[in-house]
Image (cartoon, rainbow, N blue to C red):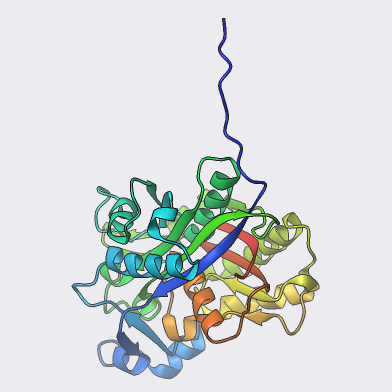
Length: 325
């Protein structure tokens, strides 16, 4: 006789309950970098749009930054750590594969015996994690999920590599996802282009490299259509989007995506994240960190329709629409 198994059933909808972030205290300007490599403030601003970035000190780890961002997100949600039962930690710069970061971070925050795992989709990691968190809750497998994108990229970048050292930085951004009476997180639209895997990788297993022009062409042509698919999947129109937060890879890429969306019906007054100017490229941390910074600055407010889209090594991409808490 075949046994019938019981399945859990969760709520029909989810939402972001709280947001938090952590950036290191050390500010590194373009002029600072020009003292150790052949570059200049003007050259960096023209090519990637960065004015300054934050570097962690040697004794501040990815886990340390994730703990602070996670605590802030839980507090912002008005919750206690005991209210969280799952921790997902998108990252691609943990110095060791074992142990993972998520379990350590959860323990230090005070989340007791959670489901805890890392997720590596590089710069698309946060959007992947948000999609997984939402679906876990709707399936009844989790109640409240803490998603923390955290990176210490300075450990993985050759400090005198002009092509990459000017771009990458450190930080963490987090959200708490929970059940909702109305849908406030849309379906994730995701995918990959594994045939382009060699365009971003690790040189000698130590330092990040990327074929800048190839990645730029891919991102400026392929990501806006993904963003439009996420809008369609959420059942809204481009004109309904109040805020666009793409992965903060390069200001020129961000502006190109926004231009394509406006050509397809997005409003001229749509607010576009430009956190890269003062934070640099923080990979999986960039989207939640930008959301937290923009909310603190009053550029995004409760109830705004936010379109998020991440893209990076793999090549991987993912996006969804969410309502700002």
